[in-house]
Length: 306
Image (cartoon, rainbow, N blue to C red):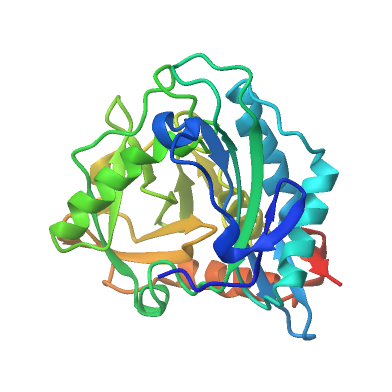
């Protein structure tokens, strides 16, 4: 259950958590046309709180809204500052940040242009999405029977509310079968994404991840590519198949919620030695040093809450 905090930023004003409500006829509730972001803030080693890659998350939120032909009634700078202020007002040292843009009440039906566009920011404490044990030991994944969206059936570069029905169905399917997370193939049969994460494989010291074709441009994905190359690992953005997962030396997921989560098994095939491999661990350790403010070269990725 989400741990309640004190205030939610709602259209430019702070309201009490329990008062941040919408009408049952809000358009997005019925049709899924809206956009959101998942962002994390971390307590750094000097005791301050820093939001990880906030500018990039705000930019992606505005990109998603633009893809939907909507318009946020605030500037990027105003949303950036509001996120910092929401973390500060709630005294959140470390946790999750959820901005969401949605269509409110008014007209109903598929074509509406006069309904208000609402912008909301909520924050709450949240630990490891796939569990602390998953971060340490790795998780079990299964390829779902559901495909990821075709690029001309859904706008895959947008983090759009309704698109996550696909993720929910895939996640439910594999969790009911006893696994931790789902992997989805694209409509041509290549590995696309997990239900809420990007996928990386390692073989013979070379890292490979799905190119930006049918996938969301993950901000943690981008961070990991940068970190991996700085550590001296070659990284390829190239398509790969389901059976390449099985014979990989290492597999790991990346995402704001999942952070860097190793995968120890896919479709009942043990990956490598069945535990997080050296490349995954090196990237994971560096990533957590970065978000704690311990890596000077990456200070530009941190927006401090002052």
